Amino acid sequence: MTELNHGNAFLDAVRPALAAGDAERVARDVRANWSVVEICALLNHPNVDIRRVAAMVIGLIGDRRQVGCLTGALKDTDRLVNEMAEHSLWSVWFRAGSKQATRAFRLGLADLAEESYEKAIVHFGRAADIDSHFAEAFNQCAIAHFFLGHWDASIYCASKAVKLIPTHFGAIAGMGHCYTQMNDLERALKCYRRAVAINPRMKPICDAIRSLETRMREENDSSGTFFGRPVSV
Image 1 (cartoon, helix red, strand yellow):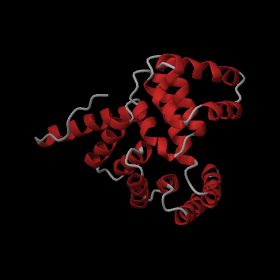
Image 2 (tube, rainbow, N blue to C red):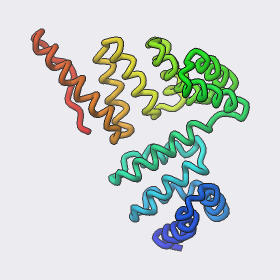
Image 3 (spheres, one colour):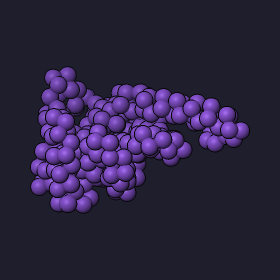
């Protein structure tokens, strides 16, 4: 089967379940006929609809081994492919822990939703202790610390997530938020630029880059110096 026909067969097979909004059926139908590796290859298909659906489906059936192909899809010229790939990355990251770690992680998410940040930190810390490779446990712990104004602790936890997943644009941007709060604008800008180099369509981060560049330019002009460089987004 040619690449074109293979992609069309994939799209035809999942359309009924997609039209019904049945995610479980989509996952079941795909697993019965395609490997995740084959679906990752479809992220480079010339048909944009096939790329969109492939990016979405990987979020349903993929795991941490598909982070690389989904990260590459963030730079697709199509906005919806980017959005599907980003959503799928978060989905993969959120379920990448062991079963026991995931139970503690979910408790932390519930605490976070209720703004019980201290409790969330305890549960996310427990999840990370159970599964030291569970990057999202560290990232969500960083978020809880951020809401408490614990900038150094938040940066530390986010850096642990980035060490495990170097392309974790969320954790990298989170460090940028902390550095902004600490008025360390150069480090903040460095983090934001790094994040959009991975995921170019994060509008809030692109806006933050422009805001920081303007602020730094004004401050540096007043002191007779200039730091930083414009970023293309």
